[in-house]
Image (cartoon, rainbow, N blue to C red; front, side, top):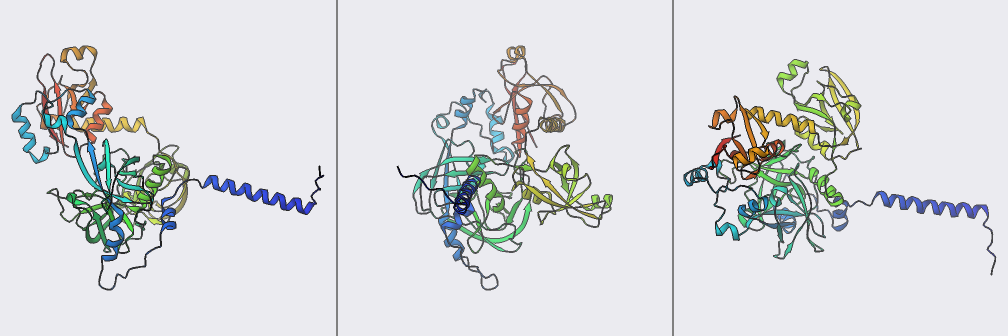
Length: 507
């Protein structure tokens, strides 16, 4: 056995230094184990050359880059009958034919499908929906709209070249209407992220999608506006800060790409504003800076890690500006500050006007919400605000975790019930026998509101479902009403009456 030699002090120092570096490297690797889509993109491709906006506009580069990165998504849903059977609920079997025809022919209620449960067509055939999606990485991560794939039991992806794959849902975020899918393939064409903050109103953009099942359709337009809130997302805490464009977008474009002339992704096409159901010049896309945050969180955690400030806000206007003596009419007015919230701890007060977050101008509430939702709990943000009409302050807030609040839900429920003019209670076991129902809410009091103004509903009526959705609690009632953007149809019964009654009104 050969005796080991003692290390001199210099050798020991070098040895310890190497061990220290290795330890630090391991620590850094642990902190950096999250995947980042933008980093994956940059390592997989070269950035295209800048395109001139001063010469003749040419859309060919954008179309060439973006088209292979947009996929056709086909979703399969259970028929209404199958859904009803799964939910074990009362059917519309007693609805009179003339009433059914009335609702089917009225454009206001055309969204409802009142088919007889026994219909063989709806018993055997699934419902099929289609739209678009955008490939984000070479290994098959795809971003699309949540409303497109919600409740689908099967999702099929067709690439630009015709290859098809089953897709797995990695995660969804109803608050931004985004969903992340994954297909099992490599070396796919994808679309590089752009920068939606730097995009300017009047700038040329290109929309790529599959409208009316017409694969790989390219249309062009300009950015018409930014940070638009059009109130189409019903989920509590929904974030709307759309890029508005006049590029032609139609049903089937949902989930498709909005790109710059360089072919970089700046938005996910989501909605159109139209009196006819088809293109009328107004289309809306979710900004890519929201997409980046949501896609990374869904890929790494399966849900979005959302930080909040803890404030109640609204857009500043000339009326409020006069009341607080401020010499401007845009910005975000702070109505109230949550106790123990991030804003409160940072020093934000009611009647402050926030004008920027992290050096990004916030002239509307939708823009402020967009900037904050990109952050995670624990991250710090710099807030610039105006106090007492003229005093400019800079504060730093550490965002807190978003938590469900029973108090908020209860307040929203009371506001909704007040608007409808109704008091409701959950039915008892005795009510179940008297009404011959298994679930429902009983109308105990009616006062001035939409139900009294627009329907003949009477006290004692038990609401069993709303728009084919089973109702058994105040929470389920609120969620069912809030999920609708147009017509509301109540189904239910009166005591000792075998007939089902239907009451319809608009929200």
